[in-house]
Length: 263
Length: 113
Image (tube, rainbow over all chains, first blue to last red):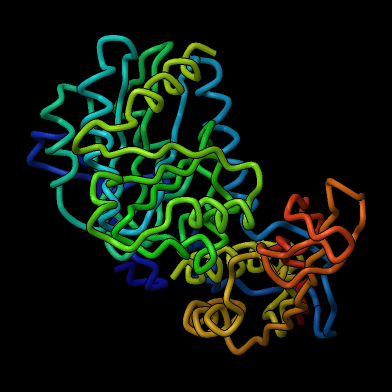
């Protein structure tokens, strides 16, 4: 945890699979300059006054996200930000996707978790370059972390970048990373009313993947109802119904990825 | 708890502007927070209190204006106030609405001395 402001900033680490050492992000977006405010003012400003600012509070992140977006566009990298609650199967979905498509679409992966290299180790087995971001106490990835991470990964031209965000259906919704598409994953072992309970995330997504459909016979999950709820929140959402484990429905997802990464 | 990041951003912007102005302290910060911004105001206030310590904004107050949300129906072009993302057009009952206002997260002004 950061001693200065308690933000957990200096506990963010970036690590490639197989590397023993890790390092901290050097470009954390907020400054601590103001904490050491010890200079004196000769001029006399004793009156209360109001300074008009009119700035977007997330403006700095949004600017950095646009910078990332420009970089991806220039290199023709199709970037996807995968968000969901923990345990919806994002990593398995990625493993299967990469194993199937890596010859056709050169890919790289950025994994986001509070702790451990577990996900990066799983992705590394597919042979795709991967970088793990451990956010420490942080509950989401931000545009600055992505900027540092793709610098390390050295992305190829005409490739795809999959970003697996921290498993959290609330916080990542507010932080643009510069991705082309945001994909929210929900599994049928969760409640079908997740889109109503966490609308901000569904509102901010372009695609909704309903995963683990092989388990539908064993759980009470109404797929149509879930889609209806999600569309109530965001009528522009597109859906894929898949089982990353059995492969059911995955072909349509692959076809979409191939189509999108050609653009 | 993304409100912590939001609170840090607020302090960072406010202190930068106050320093530019040669102010010795910040007494109040005015914010616009949209009803659909995804930020919990109570949680933001809580985080703010801990983040402002040791900065120019220590002991300052937050004045938060909640911005109501408005949407426009794509089917019948009716514009109306909404209180959630799941709103339906009161005129034609369609869910196909575009949100016009309510996502704001803006630092409007800083009072300094």
